[in-house]
Structures are given as structure tokens and as C-alpha cells.
Image 1 (cartoon, rainbow, N blue to C red):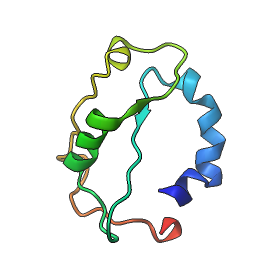
Image 2 (cartoon, helix red, strand yellow):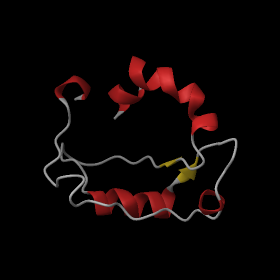
Image 3 (tube, rainbow, N blue to C red):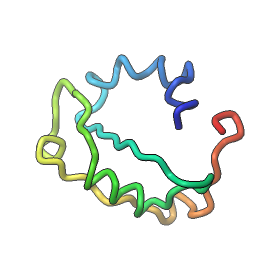
Image 4 (tube, rainbow, N blue to C red):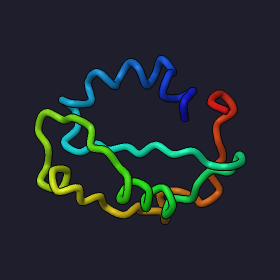
Length: 87
């Protein structure tokens, strides 16, 4: 994630986050090993430890720290692996 966060693609859009989004949050933590956390673990961390990003026009849910649960099926598979570019 650090490699992606520092990539040109991420750096290019982040200055526009405040205007483009009405909800944005993030959480930081360190994992042991190389495994990718599952969506429920990541969601649990966001709820417990997440920090709100600054947005110009926050939604009611953003202000109340009400994060929707991840929608996994059929949108995202459970077999996600880090992209080799960002390992």
C-alpha cells in the first residue's frame, strides 16, 4: 500500500479528493507476514480506527462516521493478491 500511495497515479488524483468525494476515510496498521487482509478485517479496522479525510461537502454518513459494509459478491472476488508493481 505504501508503494501505491506514493505512486504517480495516486498522487495525481489525491489533490482533487476534497472536491470529488463526499465521503473518504482511511486506517493505518501493520500486519505480520505478507498476507492481504480480508475485506471484513479491513472494514473492522476502518470502523475501529479510521480517520476521516477532509472533504468539501461531507455527507451526513461521513460526518457521523457511518461506513457502509463492503459489498463483495459479485463485485469483488475473495482471491485478491497484491499487484506485482506495488509489492
